Length: 246
Length: 326
Image (cartoon, one colour):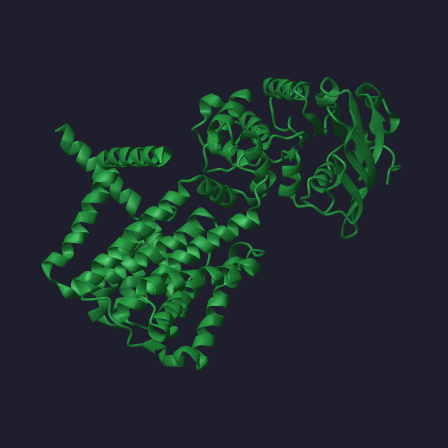
């Protein structure tokens, strides 16, 4: 299958705080990888660094063999890596259909959907995330669960090879979490590589076969979810015992 | 050829549907009313309405940039003035036909919109507004203190386009065409992208949109139409001077768009007509007029946050529906 993402010695400092500290890991094409860590572990900063929203002080990121460390976010999206945000982002005054259409109008989206028609593609994506009956509504009136689906839909509009989902279960009730889990699993079955974060390991346990754990900017464990869940260092990071990971 | 014919037929079909709507019929009715004004033979009224029509294009160009692309400019007079100067220069010094000069002037406004846009697009919100204001002030001072292109007196004595009624119809044609083109752009795919940048630039970036390029496109389109307004203003007055760059013009555009209703394009027409007619009506009151005008503006902004056009049309539609039910 081969590697789709390589993160090498990635470091990001904000003044005196090292948010991401010499992080190294790889993702196989078609894999579904989870990233866990307590609040403030550096998960979102790591996502920002990979997707170009922050520039690292040191280290590099390779996507599909291309060095994307200094590339701009839209360039990275057009190479095939799309993302969602921990705090849901949408175009408030556009309809759901137009929200997806914007992504379909990216260079990569146009390449994939230009021939079939942007509106048809956007409509089909809305249908695949279960929002087609709300196509003409603006996002501001949607419940949180639907906004999470919309975010995934927007990412799909760019025809991604890899999807980075930042805390997709955050703020959702059990049924909504189930729905998002099913959607993520289906996308992965369709060949999209998925890299997903969560601060509660339980949410990712049944979803991903491999997990990496972060604490205070460093990777502290890697392996199958059950193994990482029982890892002494991970438990201490979550329960706040010990100071050994700085 | 077949495609063109089917596009034209679809356009005509959409126009017929639009005319039958309440907004379509009231727009058409108002436009016909406006075009009948010269038949009254009232030169004074025609002159005032010519200014209002030019300001409609100018205010709509500001609404295009701020309302649809989210890029607030306090220096729109820069595009207005630059085009005014270049239009006048090409007519006066190179004997170029006025219509060609007008588009050359608009072209220069596009070039200057890039010169302003490229450095200013790194700025956001109030900083962008102040950056554009600074550029307009620089241009104002350059044209005021420089001896080139006429210095303080500018360029005057341009050939007239004809009598005021001919000018009226020329300006009316430019206004209608400019507004339709701007509205068509904001309703197109390009408009959807601009609106997405306005709503959330980070989200647009994450959707694979090169926001810098699209913001520059918005600056160029807006600059072009502001330039067309500036060129028409110069041709109408047969003169231009550094006053065309003054900050007051930039704020006129903002006030007119705000009065009519932002994020509408067509609201700018209502705003420009109200603004111009009110200014003219209050002129005899001299200094007191400014106080009354300012108070009226505050009241409009306070009680009609979304401008007067949409609430007014909704009320008229309510009355119309009521009459039809009776």
